[in-house]
Structure formats: C-alpha cells, structure tokens
Image 1 (spheres, helix red, strand yellow):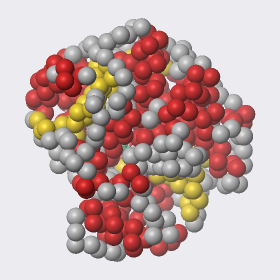
Image 2 (cartoon, rainbow, N blue to C red):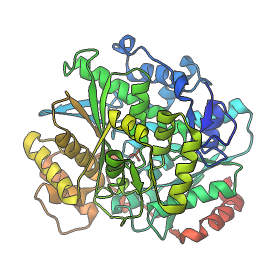
Image 3 (cartoon, helix red, strand yellow):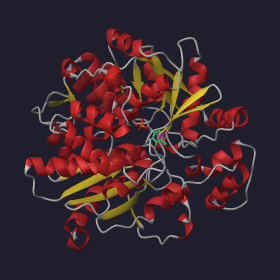
Image 4 (tube, rainbow, N blue to C red):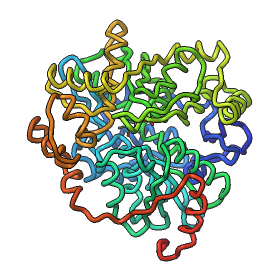
Length: 485
Ligand SMILES: *Cc1c(COP(=O)(O)O)cnc(C)c1O
C-alpha cells in the first residue's frame, strides 16, 4: 500500500516517505487509495492490551513497519508518559461514555499521536537513508504545539519550531509552550489567528520543499496513532457491557482541523462497526454548515471561543475525506483551488449524500459549552473541559435513538480553568494559574502533575513575528547553528 496525494499531482510514496515529508509536493495531503484501505478483524482484538492493539493498527496502515517493530515503538512512546496505563481509558459517567484521551504528558489528546510521531519519523528517516536533520514546522491552535514540543524535545537529528497565534491561546497553553526546555526546540508567536499561522506554515512548505516536515495532522503519522483509540474504545464498550460485539457505536468528536474525526472514519473503513460520526463544533461552525448543506464557506467572522483548539475556519483534513469518499483527486484539487482563491466550494450532490450517510454535525456557542460543563458536573460529577463539552452537547442533540455514543474527551479541564470554573458556578479573582488551584480546591478533581507549578517556570521563548515574516524567520533559525546543535 502506497500513499498518494489527495490532489493527484505527485508520485505515490511509501508510508515512511509520507511520514518524513509530511505534505505532498503538489500541496495535497498523503492518503491511501480508497480501495486499498486495509481491513482488520476487530473481533480478534477483544482481549488485547493497548500497545498490542496499536501495533496491529499501525502495521496495517504503515506497511514499512511490521507488527513487532510497531510494538517496540509504541512501547517506547507511551511507557511512563501517561498517567493511566490504559492510555485511552473509556469512562462511564452517568449515562455518558467519555473516551479520555488527555492522560498524556501535556494533558491534551494530541499526546496520543505526538508521543509516537517522533519515533515513527526517526525510524522512517533511517529506513529511507536520509541523513540530513529534519526541521519540524508546526502551527498550533494551542495544544499541538506543546504536545509536539514535548514529543520531539532532544530527539537526535530532528529540530522543531512551533508557531502559535499570539492572542489565540489560553494563558495555560501559552505558559506550557514558552517555558519549553530542550536543545532542539523553538517557539514563536504570530500576530494573527490560527488560520494565519497555518497558512504561513503551508506557504513555507511550498517555498522550502527540502528538509521540512510537519507535526500537524496533515502528517499521516499523526493520524494513524489516532485510529487506534477508536478500536480500543469499541472494545472497551463491549467489555463494559455498553454494546454487544458487532453492534454499531457512535462517536461524538470535538472537531477543529478534522483530524481526530477522520481517524474515526478510517477505523470505520477498516471494518470497525462505527455508526455515526458526530462532528461537534463551537461558534466557528463552518463544518456544521458544510455537513448539512455541502457548501464549505470560510468567508465568515472568526470567533475566539473558550474552546480555542477548535477555532479554525480551514479544516485541513476534510480534504482527505473528500478524496477517500470520491476517489477523485481532480475534483479535490479543483475544490481546494476554489477554497484558496474564492474562499468557498460546493461538493456534488452524490458526494454530500455519502458524507451525510456517515457524518452528522452540531455546534454550540460559548454559553452552550458552559451549560454543558455545568450539566455534566451537576448530573454525574464528571468535570469536562470546554472542548469535550462541545462534544457532549452535540451528543445530546444527536440523541439516543441510534444507540450509544462515545464522547471523545480531548483535554483536561485544567487547561481551560477560567471557563470551567465559571461554568460550574465558581469564581476566583486571580489569574488562570490561581484558577487552576481554585478548581482543584472546589471540585476535588486532581490537577495533572504536568500542569502544576507552570507559573514559576522560566520563560525561554519570547519571539513574535507578523504572518508575512514567518518564512524569513524560519530561514534565520535554520541558519543558526547554535540552535541546531
Ligand atoms: C486539537 C484539538 C481538538 C480538535 O482536533 P482536530 O483533530 O483538529 O479536529 C479538539 N480538542 C482539543 C482539546 C484539541 O487540542
């Protein structure tokens, strides 16, 4: 199985090459041909632990890695880094099922992929015989940046540079990034929003095609580890007696760049009995409108919300879905060109019908988000973060008629303490760090260890650039040998 570009203008490559390069040279995303998606027998997985299951899924999707090697990498990636040995535990709270994906080193779901990606990338480069250092460039809406920094810090032969929107991340997220230690890391603010940062990074990839890679979910090596927990959640739901083996299970996914939910779609195409994939958005509801109408229109106001990791108007991974569902790279290329030039596109009616047979979409604003946190806390004493709350709210709107739904819980509530504290009807006069303490005191839910003492850590990164100067900045940094070694 090879990886091809969604836009059809680049040669097919091995999984190792797709991981090392990140983005296809024609600007498209690497993906397998729709008729080559591997099929897995999930029934044979019912007794497996997470690393063994992960090795099966990984080696199926990344043929350069056999099961034994995948298991070694998975074990190296996760051992000792997650506060819960199960990696992605399924938690029943009241009537709800939460898939807790935030037990990793930075308390966001991106850890699940970003603890593993450096191992995959390093081994891929070795397999390909690439000797040059790789520079990882990443735009972050808040959580990817820290998870990538933590994953790639001090990895030999790889450097990492993270761009974050200056006013678009929470104080906790910012503190996590600007205090990042490591001899191969660099963090820089961008005077703009996430889309500016992401567009800037994509432009740099076009301008400097060699030696760069990405830790964003445009990298297939980011997506593949996320497919694993759909399988593990399904198996756990069977084990907990929430579904019969073979019964369909729905997933509600708080969505930004469409990476997490696309991993769910891959799991479905690989044979997992997935019912509906519920795309949950905040006030930036471009995907809600798209899934309901087939019209993707980014020409709308950008809202800064209390679920900032989903404040996105250009959802990169949707491109992969359009390709996997249509198999038509010409169509995808033309839709993407239209999005770039005109800011909108409309998919053909048959494609919309296919999308709607699997996906449904709901959104809620900040008030709805806070109401959700409040309802879950008072109803089942479960404290969820703002992103998870958007997912819960969507699952409520979806209802119970089509069977049980797993809500992907994507971050610790301690990453967004101001919003969570106010949602549960408490207040605190201090800064976000004081609010974290207050949240722990009021709820008794323990704060993750990695977030303790954040305020006292020294700030190591203060750079800030305009979007137009990002390329110049990367060139300068690349030339600085002091940073390289
Ligand atoms: C990144 C992120 C999301 C959105 O995930 P996508 O893969 O971009 O759709 C949701 N919640 C949290 C906490 C995140 O960090």
